[in-house]
Length: 289
Ligand SMILES: Cc1cc2nc3c(=O)[nH]c(=O)nc-3n(C[C@H](O)[C@H](O)[C@H](O)COP(=O)(O)OP(=O)(O)OC[C@H]3O[C@@H](n4cnc5c(N)ncnc54)[C@H](O)[C@@H]3O)c2cc1C
Image 1: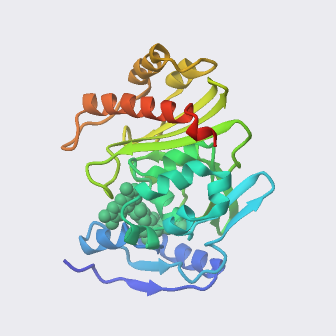
Image 2: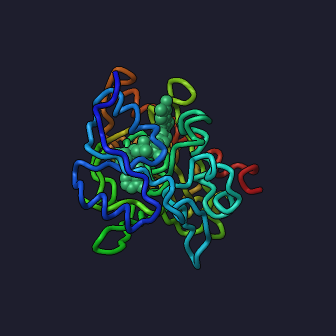
């Protein structure tokens, strides 16, 4: 199939982008990497009156360190994030997650802003932002605002983005001393969306997990924090019985959907396995290097 006809704009400033977006309202769609939107257009799952291509808007693709905040621009490609030394140093969880996003060709085009704006519940980056207490920066004609990841992702493909707003960046606090990160997931084939994924960010002291932040993808309509499992791990040595207890706590934390790829029971089991893998990696000698 071919897309339904649409007007095409390629603004060169944020102000022009917002003006066009305001003019079209719900009928205008931002085009970033196009990795999700273009297939949707081709299948006529999306039929916007206008596409607003932001690839020539300057200043949206940077990766920078502000005081106490790592800022990744909305137009930063997944691949640029994957190979960024700044992200590796200050948000290693995100670097670990990137190779799981589609295939390399997709990552050379797909963007950070597109990933959070799309809000696929199985996507890796939203789970990382939740685990890291990140925020999403947005711009609109009424001004800029920031929304914490926990409030931004509202449902399947649904976010806190208001009409006429665009994502301009994601912001995470740089990793602090004593904290370690691990991203693990299982997909049916490399490059597929995760059946279940886990973004784990923990404060580790010797062989103790002092604090744990666990965010899963693929287990609900949004990325999900596993608060009971976090409590079950906090302040304890992750011996087999402690990890098993945290795994049981996941049953109360997660209410995964079933589909042709896996039943809810399968996803629960997978979440437990991933938790065990992440905890083992976080507390291993190698992860202390
Ligand atoms: C085969 C395949 C496998 C994939 N596997 C994965 C995977 O495992 N994990 C994963 O996370 N993703 C995966 N993706 C999706 C891919 O990573 C996309 O890059 C991502 O979902 C959207 O980014 P994009 O820049 O391509 O956005 P686009 O396709 O350009 O846009 C997607 C949506 O976001 C909106 N949008 C884009 N940028 C902004 C912005 N700055 N502000 C407001 N709205 C905006 C668009 O209007 C559109 O509605 C896969 C894609 C393919 C084709």
